[in-house]
Image (cartoon, rainbow, N blue to C red; front, side):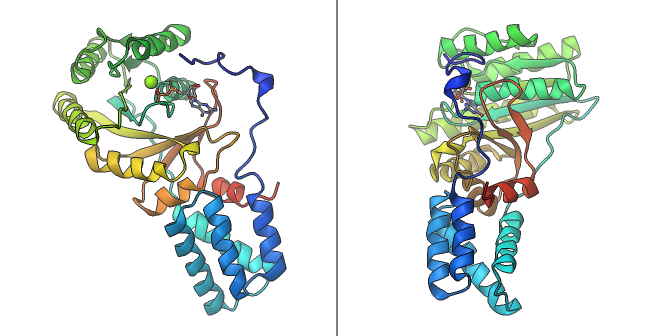
Length: 309
Ligand SMILES: Nc1nc2c(ncn2[C@@H]2O[C@H](COP(=O)(O)OP(=O)(O)O)[C@@H](O)[C@H]2O)c(=O)[nH]1
Ligand SMILES: [Mg+2]
């Protein structure tokens, strides 16, 4: 079980790098060398694929840049580079998922195994608390393994958040149902619900999520605010896009948190998902500690992706 402060020792890790290591620099060099020439666009497409944008998105962006360059007569390295930056910037959206004051806000945290759901729940709780929200409750609805429940309980104990849980193997929808009742009794304002993310049987996963979704909708009612957050690991590459599609189709995703966007991450996946299925991003996870969560900002992101630092 990996928890904050455990796992890797601090000094074993490089300081977080910004954006894609080396790609920004190589893009710069490419734009400088033969920006606008036919071969330039082929090389650009390859670099974008390396940056984890995926073949389809890389080809689309390259084609769009080519059109813009032709129609505006762009030739200089600077003009082409800023057009590229604008294309990236225009491909991604942010979303503010702050709790609505005076309501019961339920966040269902989704994602496949190991992406960082449980860790992200603790980070989100700390973030909300730092912005003045009190009465934050965890629902241990990843009931698949005892360790998953324990992990959330430890986060709760360490950071002083209440945790609603049942026995391992119990019905996740029932745990969330209980947590809503408990939050109402105690006057809590936020529930962060963990879920299991087994993907090997897509049908089962979808069916279970839809059942949970139905229970939440009927139990929370119109006076509650219900949002579904998908957690995606930046290091999973283009499979992350498939995950976005599956979860979005199953229950509808309100916002994505991309984790492990710290050292080895190649954040181009954000552009891919931002374009198709077109989902917005709420936060980036940039480390294992509870404070390693930053709101997603499209301008900063575009800058970092193309940064030559
Ligand atoms: N480097 C880094 N590691 C993370 C981040 N978020 C989670 N992790 C690690 O990813 C692993 C799996 O996290 P966990 O929350 O248990 O994933 P879950 O199975 O989706 O609940 C743990 O070792 C976490 O410390 C992040 O933003 N950056
Ligand atoms: Mg977990």
